[in-house]
Length: 348
Image 1 (tube, rainbow, N blue to C red):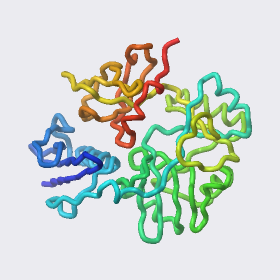
Image 2: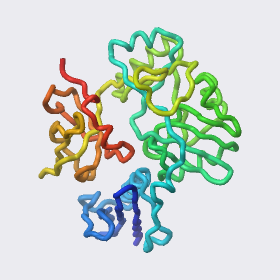
Image 3: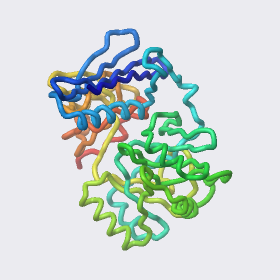
Image 4: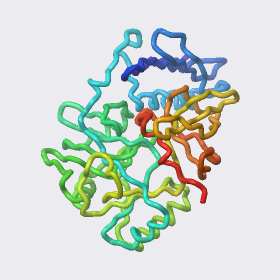
């Protein structure tokens, strides 16, 4: 009989949470259960497998569950009995990523036709940087905090005989890398993107680290744009090939911008409903404005009250709700004050 269990902890500001996952045998097959809540309180319980499944399938579900929590900053203790917590101050790395402003659909053609701007697919994952030094290799989220990452991803980073800081989007156990901040002793942030991308191409990443494809000419960009749109990808990013790497988000515009084929927004869970749905709100001048209910699919854990989630929607009604919102993921790398009404795109 093969059984596994993991206990993870998360402590940041006033949050002090525990998450337990277990892979258990039942009638010759296996189930994956979980429990979560505030440390010291009664934990809420649930299952990721409504019925028992073969070991290989259950193991994949279990590993994915543990990985998803590690990527949000949960950390294990050494023996699963004594809490070992990395607090916020210990997790700060001082490394912050570049954030992009969106453009409207009517602006896209100008970027496609201008060879000063290169284009890449906007991956639908979680922002992640990896810092590799001679002493350690760590993953960093968009808040600049060290977080968990798949062991296979870190192994791919360690296979490179150099120190570096790379920037990308993590999807499952792969990192789709699109920028580099430093390489060995060289700080590359003041170099042009054209120079930084050339460094990335020469490193020769493999396995779980994948270099994002870049289209440069008008014809290449137009072809890739139509391909990604047909594949229902999240969107594209346009980068001026002479641009520097600047952490943070500019007040407007910028030399790197993004365009999404569909709209998403970050909202606050303000109510837990029956039948696997949650009520969500958005901030308008620090006041919470209710914008509708979001159904949570059976294969996903129902978010908790006050958690921030990412939803996809067709459009928003002025002074009303989101139309056809779809739950994407819990966002522990987004702050509450970022869940503002200015995110929304309204029906015209």
